[in-house]
Image (cartoon, rainbow, N blue to C red; front, side, top):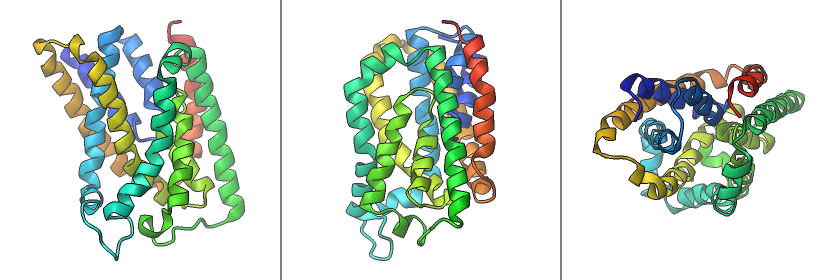
Length: 270
């Protein structure tokens, strides 16, 4: 297993990029190659520390998640109805991801395909923001409780499938999907964070069941460091992004993606 400082770097990269529309996958793989931290155990480590970033969202939005345990007529996004909405959003990616898991790892994890996903996601961000500017003020409709209908939840879930292309960004796909559906940027971002939890837990759990045997007892300290750093940096990234997203567009992230794509192309070994 990697030394502690590699775990810190990888935890920082995971936490800071997981919920921003820049794709954590490309950043993690590039960081791993630059640190000479590669191979099956490294790939499983990268998946395991995602749990830290997931936990950060659960803690930050704990009232929302606790609300799913009890129906509240004043808050439509609660109880069985809220669970149903998250299920609708998670279902498309879980089904398609399960059916194509092997093919994606076999054909879409190369530097060329990931770099192209960075560019494709950036161009779509420019389009979505230009469309939003033409349409004027987007609708919030009372925030999450009234803006997320079953139809909207399913639409965002279908858009989330674009993130099965490594490098596209799950948060980018869901935020843009919400905006294309008419949501304001902040509501789309908040729902993106909530919707990440079930689909990421399922994906991480699936990979962990298959690969947990790669770790021995001596690896758990390093895993704990990566998990803790991922949690703290994920917390900071989500708080900062939500604070900014009402005042700025996605264009800076699109520009960053266009600048980062050739870096992946040139520095990521074939």
